[in-house]
Image 1 (spheres, protein in one colour):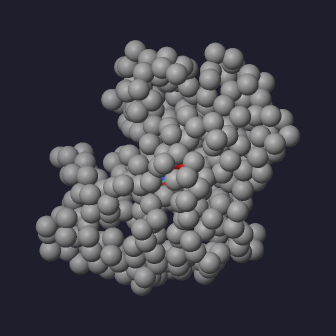
Image 2: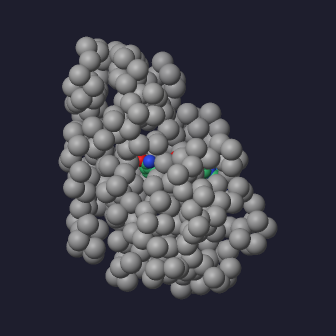
Length: 324
Ligand SMILES: NC(=O)c1ccc[n+]([C@@H]2O[C@H](COP(=O)([O-])OP(=O)(O)OC[C@H]3O[C@@H](n4cnc5c(N)ncnc54)[C@H](O)[C@@H]3O)[C@@H](O)[C@H]2O)c1
């Protein structure tokens, strides 16, 4: 309902900033919580002065803080705050687990106490290296040993999913869980294959591809992902359920990088690096990552509609403008 008060954790992040902007456009009152200090909250500078937006700097692992923020005036919490990105989970798995598990437990407890709807953002990494694509929501998780930090992110999100599902089933919490598949677009940090290489192309630098580039991903443009989130929380039949949110068109990484070069109109080459040189032998790249999207489509009518070329072109234009 328009005017509802909504909390977005991780609101200065890539997805959180777009989601917060869209919720404000639709007339909601948005309270954004993020660990980033206000002066570094560059992703939300366009909304920070909005009359219906308030920014709180804080840590989701701080239970006392979460208890003071969430009260019964909130109708929904979009919980997006997390430690994200390969570098983070290879270098600092304890922070990954602490934020993604402890932070989520704090949010669950506060939502239960005040009967707030909880949207929990999970990940396609949940499925690990299951070779049988496309993955449906109840498909197996196939992971490597805990000796390899690489699996800490997937494990932390799956522990959090178990807790959220438990709160749905045993304690009557309302909400849904979304597993995002390779979301990209303006404002994404440079740590990811699309954002890093679009920035390189915009600066006239050669692109960098890990391994052969034969790995496939289903790249999903941010506007499609935000629309999916909003449709899901509006749909009573989505309550208590888990959904893949992704484009189901598969592209090789090489194809994506070639498209970026073509969009840039520059003469650039694609240089290859070995993932194991960067992250050691323990890093296992996932060769194919493809969602089944029939569940979200039959529940909400949503499908990703932005083509790769269209999404990359919009992102490239944004990056060019931002480095001027
Ligand atoms: N972008 C994707 O393709 C993708 C894919 C799968 C899952 N996800 C999930 O979607 C969510 C948003 O991802 P994103 O791509 O926007 O990542 P992001 O890193 O851009 O945003 C995460 C935000 O959380 C904040 N944060 C981190 N630790 C915090 C803490 N302890 N307390 C408060 N805030 C904290 C960060 O400052 C950041 O602004 C995450 O939960 C992520 O796991 C994203």
